[in-house]
Image (cartoon, rainbow, N blue to C red; front, side, top):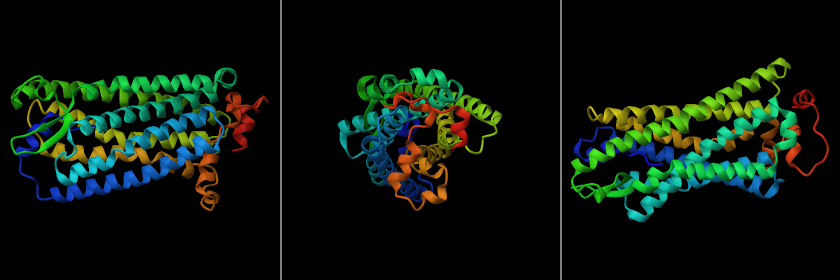
Length: 346
């Protein structure tokens, strides 16, 4: 996901590098490197387990698509690591546009799928009969396909405006700007880029953070309240996994969204080197969220100590399996047990 806005593109070459700028680069490379390794291995394992070892259910299809989105995003990180090390974009216009489009689409897809998981869990707990009758693999495929198209729609600014830009010092940047399409001088470009950056950041904050967080929070509250009434709040595996995914999403993405808003609106007043540094750090924290989900699937499951001595595929398969009260989309024709019995069995 591209986050180098107009101020960072046009003014970063004009400021003196802080004394600890090299340390910042090192931290950035280490964070991205860890995210890449954990994300490729973890999400690759989830893809293998959910895609090839398990039956097709609503749960496995949803988690499979989430892993595919995160895996695709993780695959773009080596290019961003090279960008940081070389301090300019060395891969040309085509890879600039392709990498940033892939990253942007899959970030939106990941966020929307996490929201869908929360809605799915909520519907299964609050409306088990409806879920039994209408929650099918076919419907899940249609909804997830719609989410992919929705992610592409929200990525249109990146698809249209991502470009390379070479400054007077000869450094090439890859980011959101119209290049020579809407002006030849930096001043002319900034007149377009700054409002574009503000609009883009605002859209991301609303649709890729505020609304998902609100939905996840409401779903968590409804599920927790429903389960608490039955006195089973400590034994619900879906609630633990849902909570862990939601909290991880919020903690990883909120700092980045906040700093993005500040830097986009602050650029109209003055340039802040500190905010640019914070943007890099919080961006990499947000990226780290793409490698966390496979870890949470295993760690937040029941009997974690026992799972440590199991094989990872078996652990993931158990974490991603369909819940007994969510079997309406499987080949089984038997009716699921009552929700109380199912929750007590966990």
